[in-house]
Amino acid sequence: MPSTVPQRGPEGTFAYVIQQDQTVQPRPIEVELIQGDLAIVARGLNEGEQVVVDGQSQLRPGSKVQARPAAGQQARPQREGAAPAADGRGRIRRRGPGRC
Image (cartoon, rainbow, N blue to C red; front, side, top):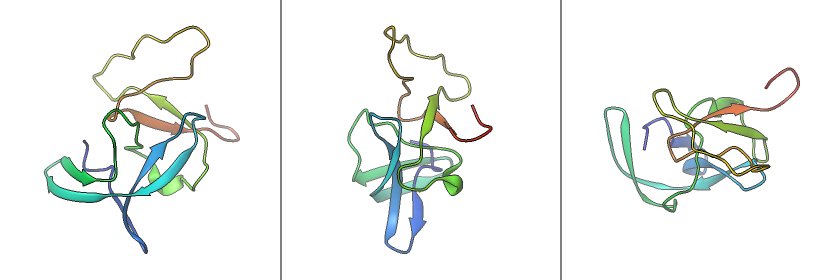
């Protein structure tokens, strides 16, 4: 995953995980290796979970976000009425007053 995902805080290393209701929650993770722009997470995330890769400094637990594909990736097809989807590398836009 991108090396921008792991964040450091007073409680240790964590990642913001996107919940089904499009809110984020911090989750403790253990990083095995960071090399260049890639990170290998040893523990704390499950395959297929969506994580925030950009703009974490503006987030708090429970913040609403909107997933979007990372640069150079095509959006995945969505079912009608389904929430936006992203893979673990999707970039996130925060929803809020004056934001899309």
